[in-house]
Amino acid sequence: MPVFAGTCVPVAILIDYLKAGDSLERFLDGFPTVKRAQAIAFLDMALEAALIEEPSVRPA
Image (cartoon, rainbow, N blue to C red):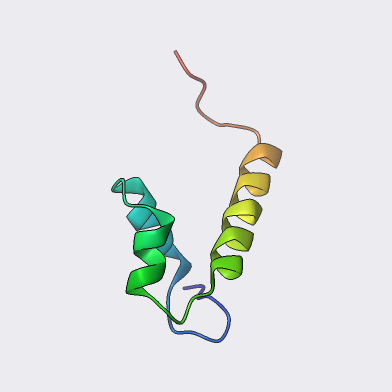
């Protein structure tokens, strides 16, 4: 499972927080070893990957 560099914090936890409606601030407060820049960089990469991949399910 991928983790944020220099930490034991899985990147999936950030996704779980956001899916639950929590803010990035709340995530960072709960995991102080993760730097804001790391979280933003991960979200940017995830967005870029999502935009590159062809969606397998099209909206109705």
